[in-house]
Length: 174
Image (cartoon, rainbow, N blue to C red):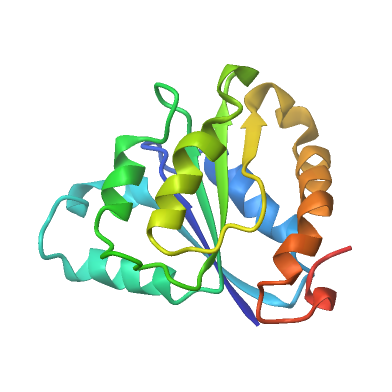
């Protein structure tokens, strides 16, 4: 079983960004081959700046122990949200070593399409994550075609991901 964690940095709980990131995992991986946990940071905003925080430490440990991380944030001022950054600031140097990560950002138009590559990828790499694919930027005007957009991205990403995930290519949905 692939342990998949989706971390969502939208300050609004149960956001479209959370939906998109969850659907990506479901489209990318074959049913029955993964265990998915969604960490919606909006639900933990009251503790994000508490030091120490047993709850936040538990969440950080859970993500660091995952096989695949989908790190998802809406685009705010050309980058990820402060809530998202505050969660990842809790990690020590190389705190995500060995975790395969997918940078995913959402936005209203294509002006910030490079945001996953320019801002989110460096954050994940700095923490030691393996980021074998290009980031996914999802334009919210595509919500009516969310599954098709995600399936196209997943099709392109499968080969690179399969080289790093602990299970064989057959684990990835076709």
